[in-house]
Image (cartoon, rainbow, N blue to C red):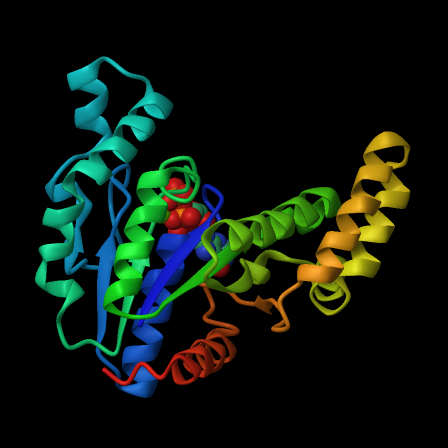
Length: 254
Ligand SMILES: Nc1nc2c(ncn2[C@@H]2O[C@H](COP(=O)(O)OP(=O)(O)OP(=O)(O)O)[C@@H](O)[C@H]2O)c(=O)[nH]1
Ligand SMILES: [Mg+2]
């Protein structure tokens, strides 16, 4: 199964790919392949089996096309489309791994919100089932509005990509008891959490949040989000159990 790690910039995708792949290799003794699809990455803590930077990097694109970093990510999306066939011919996509973890750029515009990224996900699905792990930056727990926004983004992604999504809240090692409580509340009762945020914000924004609450309630995944820490490895067993459950339900026994 492909497990694609996504989430806003700096939420901990790369750290979690490293921590979770090490954990699964050590504790469950499975074979994990790692793919880096972030052309903006400088130093990676893991050794990828395939690295998009073999084809292009954000640094090179900025120089070659005279672009700033955001323009370069949009150009990178185009290049991802152009190189798609070559990329998918790489042996990692066919090799005998139990799971292939895919690290993606924090600039969601390049991968999740562009047709080229969605098309690549579709192509991957033809090879094996694809699960999305959406990472909420736990540091946002200091601001319930931001925590809720990031949670809603995971629902929006879900409607866009039509893939199974597992949501995790990362960096919980940084949170104090009050912030941890906010995370727990969001996980256990997204509607109640959103209502509180709406009350606090008030006005038109509060009304809009209340409308969104309906959507949250209707489409919230049946699985709860999982609190994790790529740093302390807290929650990785729970994450594995959920990923494994999806793997079994997909019947992917390759
Ligand atoms: N305390 C703590 N810090 C973390 C954790 N996970 C990631 N970080 C830190 O958060 C920062 C960003 O981590 P990355 O793994 O690079 O995040 P990313 O989502 O891959 O970032 P981009 O690819 O740039 O979008 C780094 O300084 C990490 O050390 C965690 O669980 N706990
Ligand atoms: Mg990264």
